[in-house]
Image 1: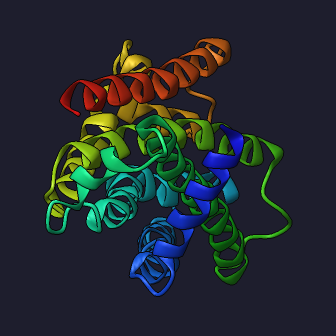
Image 2: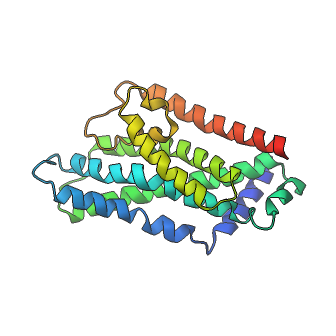
Image 3: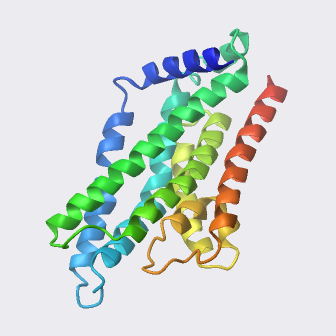
Length: 243
């Protein structure tokens, strides 16, 4: 099974070569960084906590408006070939089981999500130095980045499931944007931790300089694992019935 998964993952990686995934990966994270930096510099009289204040501005735009749609772009591209000329039907004629094919695609999306998080973190640090912030980001922010990455895996799983259910390239992108906005709204409620699209925003502590999860770290971790595995099982079960 591991050999099949490795071969499937290799094939999926080849599909990413010379695709628009990489320009999107490199360029889109610059937008929330520019917006966050501009907002921070225009409100220095109010935002006086330096790295913490800049973090609230950059991550608010990133987690709400850009990350989920960007993952939607990744997912849409990975399903694009299967959506041409009913190529998706050929998946069920291959000797590789569908759960393996699905998992290989999902793992690639999760890897891209992890790389996106790392790229955003690097841009945040470099831009912070450019706008005059002293020293290094506090340890809390480093922890929030790692914690937010767990929430990012939930969004990646959900966005990939949406992309697997539709042949439309734009649908996962549009629903990602809607999901990000609903995540912001849910994060401000007492039950927001249970909304999948709020997981990343809460994990990264977006728009807050104090830890909004408080003592809910274990619950947050359990929910990210539950959603990620649960979405995969539902997706494979649905496609198995359809196939």
